[in-house]
Image (cartoon, rainbow, N blue to C red; front, side):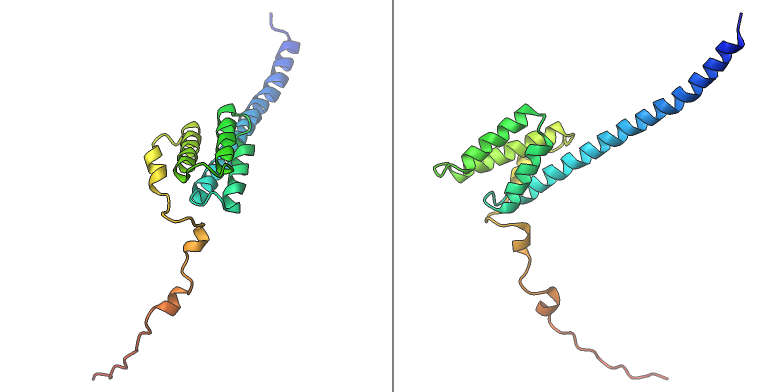
Length: 157
């Protein structure tokens, strides 16, 4: 037999459990979205400054990756290996660039960028060491363009 106590307890529990479960799901999805965005920004920064591994921007982005991916032992080991190669004066530049490309590729694979290949990453290396701001023209575009002359038109009847 159904008692009023069971019905009341069921309504109270059902009234509390539903919103609680929905709230937990929303919180979990939001947390994962924030984590993914932070990881994507760290990868983007490393990709942006990879052309000049001696620059402070590259070092900061490498530190950011190190902290952001601190739970991933493989990534942490790759960062340690890269750091040792960068600080070894006898390491050829091509070896360092290969390690940077390998690290970025591994980061991309672990974070859902499945279409990216090592060739894609390596392809966009600049030929000279530079930071993104060093490739901007020294003068503004308006100063380098020729002045346009205006022509007055006669009124027609």
